[in-house]
Amino acid sequence: MSALINSGLRLSKPFRVGLFFSVLVGLSHALPDALAKQPYKLEIIARDGDVIDGKTLDFTNTLPDRYPVINNNGNVAFHTRLSAADDPDNGVFTINDGLIAAAGQTFSGKTLTEINPTPPAINDINDVVFDASFEDGFGIFSKDRGLLVDLSEPVDGRTLLFSLFVLSVNNTGNVAYRSAFVNSAGDGLKSGIFTTTDGLIIAAGDTVAGQTLVNIGFPLLSDTDDIIFTGTVDNGTETTSAIISLNNGLLATAGEMINGRRTTELTFVWSNNADEFAYLTLLEDMPGDTFFRNAVVSSKTGVVTASGEVIEGNLLQNVSVFSLNNNGDIVYIARFDPSTGGGLAVVSNENGIIAQLGDAVDDLTLTNVIRPSLLSINDSGVVAFLGGFSDGTSGIVLATPVPEPGSVFILAVGLAWARRRRFAA
Image (cartoon, rainbow, N blue to C red):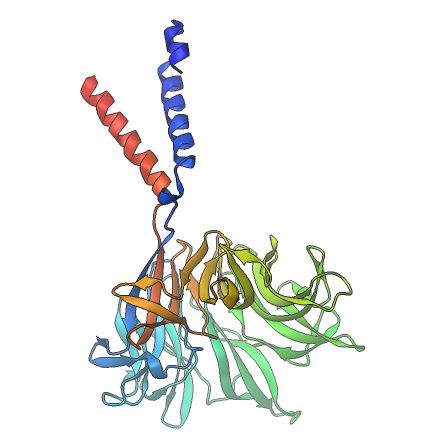
């Protein structure tokens, strides 16, 4: 650059500005490891002993499937037990609004007797839906709309027995849920997926792409009311696990080749509003090989991660659960080989390890990433998960992306240059 200036060549102002910032980018890429990015800030947002609206939280006795859910406004909804000294029941809370529901509260004329263990769901309008019992019945409730469906009454002629594991609410307010049921035909116990707007949507025994649906997993409801779920299908010769869409039929089945490896079982799925889904599976290392790899597979990018991969010097042994946002970012709970550091971690497909045992969280140390609890990621990349801490308590950890030091360096130098030019003018 100095040679160009000394030669007498006159550079235009836009060219000089562009060249200046190109040099800054190059410098930032050449920064030493000491300036490597610290991608996430960890903080505890709720834990044992915290008091919210007069209720004392007790995550220690909370079942691990009661995971926190974060929406795109950064609000976190969660379900936890309450201290036995305070109230021997469960409660539904959000970080922004406090207590949403507990025994004794009344919704649509129904006084709640118990909050059932199904985790709550939250949409981007901050409506929270949850499963609760009341005298002589149980149902699905909304924070804002009250009782959505009385599950103790027949739905489309089916007597529902219980809902299972996951509620899913979209931004139009429709809610999907799975339930076991019996019907008037007397053909035994079945499972099906229902919505609060349309009742029974699909059930075991229905036909999907010419195959009989045998089992149904939990539903994931999109803003277009498509529902994606895991299931087992029977083609008349054999049964196989599959990923199924209400609108598009079979999306994936065990036995398909992914990046040169055959899937053997599809056990867990997550989807977004961008026509992407990802699933947990076992992969054969090579066709005909008997060594299997636990893996997360994306419908858009193929294998995201698999056991045997080395992540920041840690050998991945197992992936248990994951979550997917609308940008295609995936976070998962990993177990590493003890010989390479070991322990549990929360890992991002974009940024590597987010949180690992031994990390500082506020004034404590992370001692556990609670499994098989799910975790949640919003479109800003903020992650919520259940963790255990060095003082023996448990609670919700929020992992928030922070700017990369290189970006901060460029911005700081650029602003300083701009101020210098302004003052020199």
